[in-house]
Amino acid sequence: FVRVVVEGPDENPEDIAAIKSFGETDEDILRAEYLEKFTDHDTAAAGDYLKLLIARKLPHFAENVEAVNFANTSEDTMGNVFGIIANKLVFGHFMSTLSDFCIELQGINTQREDLKPLVLPAFTHQQAAEPTTDGKKLAVRLRAIQYHVGKMKDPHGIFYPFSGKLGGAVGNLTCHYAAYPDIDWRKFAREFVEGLGLHYEELTDQCVSYAVEAQHFMTITNILTQIIKLTKDFVKLCACPAQFFVKEKRAGAKGSSIMPNKSNAWGMEGAIAMLKESRAKLIFLACELPGYPHEGDMERSYLFRNIADAFMPIFIALKRISREMKSYRVNRKKIDAFFHEYPGMSGSSIQTVLKSYGISGDAYRMVQSISINPDGSYANAEKFQSGLEEQLEKLELPEKQRDEIMALCDPKNLTKKTDEIASENLEMLSRYFKALKETAKKYTK
Image 1 (tube, rainbow, N blue to C red):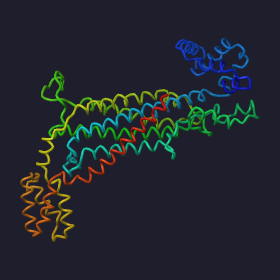
Image 2: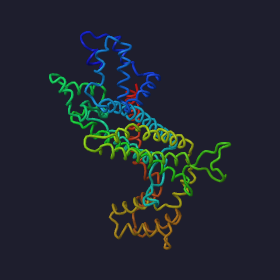
Image 3: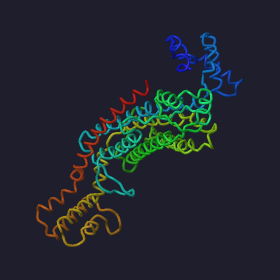
Image 4: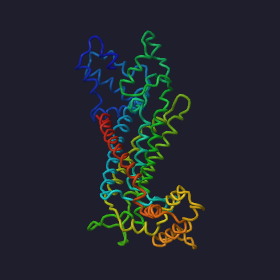
């Protein structure tokens, strides 16, 4: 209406401002809701109410009120509203919250690694595998999140906006061209939709195809999967009997409703459930939104109206995870004890170095023989190191090579390069998420 009727040769800034302000008050919303009882159609009721407001408050436009939503179906209004809301919700609020979360995790990691690096056991198949570092574990997850965020951007690094359309009942501009065949409605529709900050789909049904929406929602589910994994892995590192991280004792706090002998990571456990819930809802939307019958029905409109329901648990969960992670401190005694109990984690490096020396025999099975006891249990540090020294004597290696091999028993000597690479990546990621935070601000204005 504003563009067709008001912004013409005789446009009046006061008229434009007045029309743009219509429908913003609580009273306006209630009156439109009351009209819906008569129209039995929410968007039609809103349109009728705007016509009444214009005719009453700007009587010189009374003859032009039918320009409101001219030739359009409700989806030409609501679909664009949904796109605008999704742009603000996803690229503004979600990306801002995600950035804060990732930045906070890096801050927690920095505090943990006051005596760098914080070396931890890595696990494969639920068994002690090789030494790794806390920073490297975090960097892997954050790099994956960075990758997925990048997939939501165009080649210029701009978020690919959610979709909008202006094409009438089935997207063919039928009524528009029937009424005014000399107007370039294709150009008008594109400029209108893109002017709202949306991706313009020229060929649509009653609604957009939801191709962009499905892609973004599935990408976000992949981001949530990375956060779920990161949180679940941390909870396992805090669990008995490992307890590599322990919750700081706070006076008066109850770690369990009945058992005073323990404290639970229930904040993170609940957050994991929330993220799984949101992930399931987003997958559902990505699958169901594009599947409307023929040119459309009410189902997909209903689904998008509840978009906040899919995102609300995410905002709560990320705050819970970061808040609870901050309450845990490093339990170095447990970490050191674990490496003492499972020294064979250096075995893969030792057997690889022995192979590089060109020793005769099977280096893998030689190290295996000293890592695993005859009864299948794992050798502790004393037994492993004495067995290794004995094997090195049999190989008659030069003293320098023997010293190099024995030095590999110290996990810190195995993770120096890993720590270096992880630190470089974390510095880059810190800049990335701070920049993402600034970008997100532009979408919430």
